[in-house]
Image (tube, rainbow, N blue to C red; front, side, top):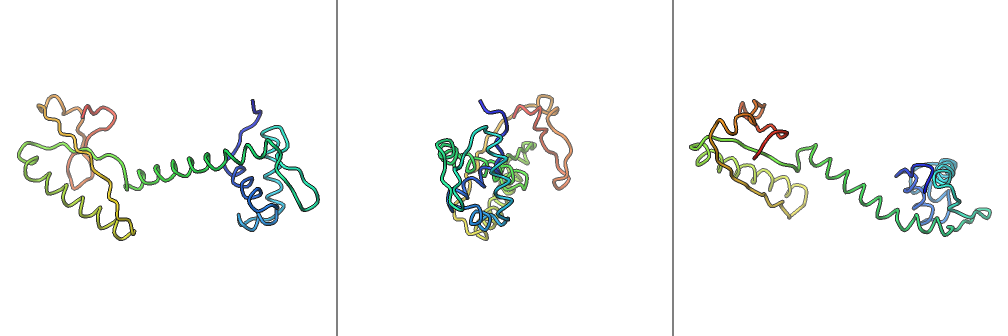
Length: 171
C-alpha cells in the first residue's frame, strides 16, 4: 500500500522522463526546467516509497517499479483527459441532457420545430469544428397530468420558458 498520493502531474513527468531518457529533455518537452523535473520525480518517489529511476550521471533507467508505473500512467492520464473533456463539454453546454416540458398543442407544433433548429445549430457547430459525427439524440416522451409533473417544472431563463428541475424530475 502506498503512503502518499500519486498526482497526475507526477505521472506526466515520469512518462516524459521515461520517453526522453533525461530530466533535461523531459523538462524541454514539458516546458519546465531540469531542476523542476528532478523535484517532481523526488516527490513522486517519496509518494510511492520506492525509487523509480536509477541515476548514473546524466543517464537513467527505470526500476521495475518505475516501469510498472509508466505502464499504468498512460491509461490513467488518458482516463483523466477523457473525464476532463466530458466535464468540460457538459459545463460548456456541448453535451448533456436537455429536458423539456410542454403542453399538448405545443408538443405537436413548437417542440418539433425547436428540436429541428437545435439539430441544425449542432450540425453547424460540428461542421465548423471539422467533425462529421453528430451525437445521436435520445428522445424520451412521457405524458401526464399537470398535477403529476408540475413539481418538476421551475421557471428558467431559456426564452422565458420553463425547465425541468433535474433533481426531482421523474421524466
